[in-house]
Image (cartoon, rainbow, N blue to C red; front, side):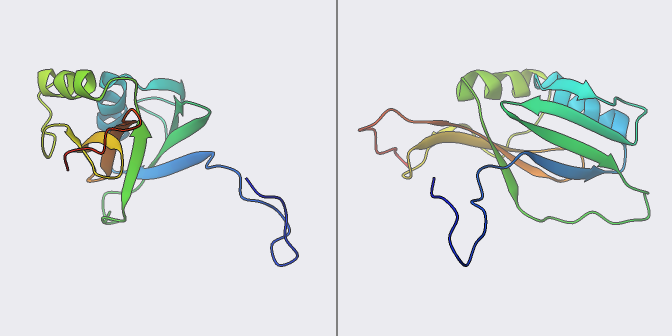
Length: 134
């Protein structure tokens, strides 16, 4: 990490939280807790819910059904065992986009879309020297 620069008064150190919109809080809370996310605040009937993710948070905020949600990008979450989480998602009846694979950039990963269309990537750094198979 670098320190402040004259044109940038403070260093950007980390992401504290990502907040995703949902039309149905109960459905989204069930989705994330079923994957192992720890609910820290809110819940199925709340307007705002927060899950612990390492030193940060994944938040959900309720939006009216008439307000459209659209694709905006992807949240990448590091997990301890990509393949075990993939297998767990299948047992839950979820549909990951593809089986886990090794990316040439040095991560093993798979993608899953939440009930509101937010794309999630669950990943783990590959050991050094393993270039990945793409």
